[in-house]
Image (cartoon, rainbow, N blue to C red; front, top):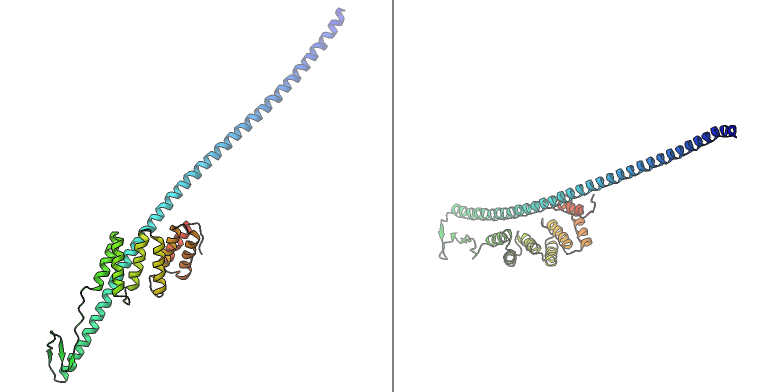
Length: 275
């Protein structure tokens, strides 16, 4: 019996050793699985952190883009204001030059008439009608004296526009148009009426006024500006599609104008690509 026990003892120890080795193997497998799972968790956490970092960078870039866009819009508005001021100055200068040219032409005619009279031996004299110089039977007409210079009316209206007194500006430009409908500045006055209405956010009335500029003065250099502000008015009214059509028309019909550049800029802000 003792011998039998002694013989079975090594077998028992061996089986126990085998069992222990099997358990250790299982434990090692479990540890390996846990390690792999832990590594996966770490990778997932890292991926989530990467996503969060990317989202954060996107948010920062978006905010920066919005700031840049707002700055760009402000600069465009400043450019528009400077362009308008420059246009007003150029208009007034051109008008003065035209008036001066007319006066010079009239003076030359008067001088030629006087010289012709002197050549004929007839001295100039003053007519009894109030100091108008004449030569013989030919009376040199004196320039008409108006109660108020039309240019003064126009300039006063334009100064009111610059100061933001839009009602006064509209009244002044309309007064100018009533008395000087065929003058060189008539199209400009009609345009600034539209600009004054636009500045007051009376977009529907502004559209009608800009239409009047385009229809009544089709060859005017104010037509591109009228079309541009017509498009801006539609957009301000929420009629986006109509506004885009107007801006695209400016780009297509007046590609080299300043208004075309402003139209392209606004179209890009609206997400519309231009060629």
